[in-house]
Every structure is written in structure tokens, then in C-alpha cells.
Length: 86
Image (cartoon, rainbow, N blue to C red; front, top):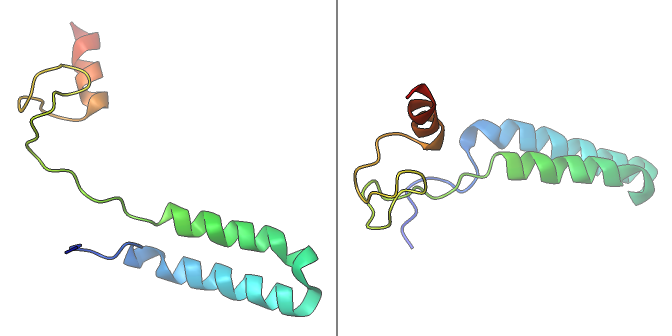
């Protein structure tokens, strides 16, 4: 599979490293009983910076709001704002 960008965003690498180092240090000093909240924090930080694979710009499936294939301009929020203004 040719994935064009890293699975974890580069902007998040320092935050993930800091959270993991803190969790490892707490576990080394106090054991897993004290470290489990920090491991949960590390897991949260990792999942926060995971990048989803991009979607194809023109798909044959209809838009979830306007139900027209290949004609949708904008995301769900902008479409709903356009509908609300009418």
C-alpha cells in the first residue's frame, strides 16, 4: 500500500514522546498502579494525532446531505448552513 503521509502526524511526535517518557518514568518509579492514568493519556495523545486516509475528491457515491453525486461543494457543515439560510 502506498500511503503518501505518515500514519501519525509529525506535529504530534513531540507530544507523544513526552507522554510516553512520562508514563515510562512513572512506571519505573511507582509501578503500573500509579502509571496507568499516564498510559491512558499516552493512548489518547496517540489517537488524537492519527491521520485518517484521505478520500477521493470525486466519488460516485452521493453526498450524505444533498444526495447528488460529484456535485457537492463543501462539507456537511457548510451545506447545512446554506440550507439554513434559505
